[in-house]
Image (cartoon, rainbow, N blue to C red):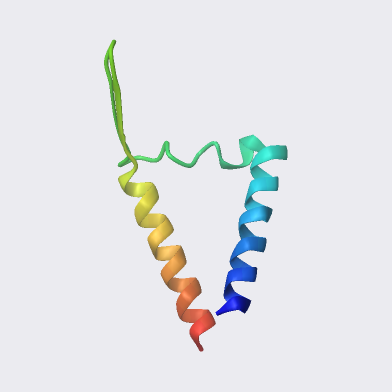
Length: 68
């Protein structure tokens, strides 16, 4: 279990560094077709449906590969 926590922590640090130094690298994320945005004068509502489906599929594939 500790091995996976260390790997997860290193991956999060890597993603954080990439987002800090290359913010345009992930600018497409959250603006995909299927992500719902409702904006008015007083409020904003955002439902990232397509983005979360992509994350779910990628994580499922990665976990199935590491499980073997």
